[in-house]
Image (cartoon, rainbow, N blue to C red; front, side, top):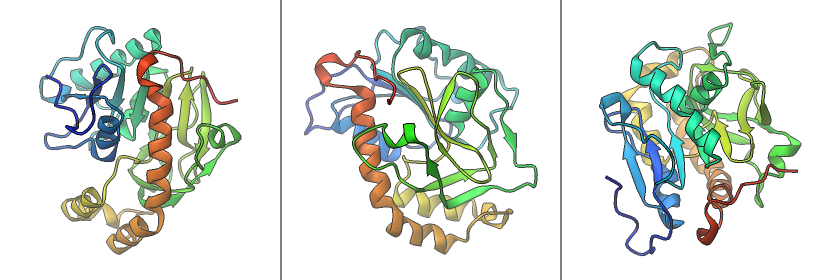
Length: 253
C-alpha cells in the first residue's frame, strides 16, 4: 500500500513507485522531495517478495534505488526488475534509476555493466563533468562533485544521451527518451545515510580508489548544498506540474 504523504502537503498526484533493494533501505532525500511535490510513495521491495504493477496506470512515476547486489546477478527477481523497466519506457511515464537502478536501466537497453578493469571503485565524493545537455536539464546548475557508492559501472548505452561523465566510470547520468533517467551517483543520500554506510560497510573504504570515512563526512558539508538544490529542481521538472503530471518531460535542447 502507498505510504501516507507529508501531512503538510495535500497529495495531488498518483503515487510514485519506489523500488528498494535492502530490507531496511530508505528513499532518503528523494522520498522527502517527492512528498513535498505532492506525490505519495508506493514503496515495494521485489527482492523480498513484493510484486511490481503490471502497468504504470496507477502511478505518476517510478524510482529504482541502489543496493549491494550486482546488476549482473542471476536472481529471478532481479531479471524481472530489468524486464519491468520496459513498462515506464513504453508508457512514457517518468522513470529514474539511481546507482544500481541506473545499471538496471542500462541492462534493459541491452548494455553491459562491468567492474573497472583495474578494480577501482567510487566510494565517496568524486568530480563529474556535465555535458551540454546535462547543463540544460533544469534551471539549476548540475553538480560537479557527487556522492558515489559503487564498484561497477557502464558507458553510455545505444539510444541514451550522456548527461554527465566521470573518470573511472564514463556514464554518470544518462537520459533515455523524454522521461527516463539513470544516475550512477546518489542524489538520494542524506547525512544519516552516509554516517550509517561508512560504519556498516567500513571495508568498502579499503578498496582501490575509495575514500576514507572522514572525506565522506567532509564532502557532505562541502558539496551537498549544490546537490540538494539541483535534485529539488530536477525532480520538479521530472514529475511536471501537478495538474498535468502526465506531460512529457521534453529532452533538454
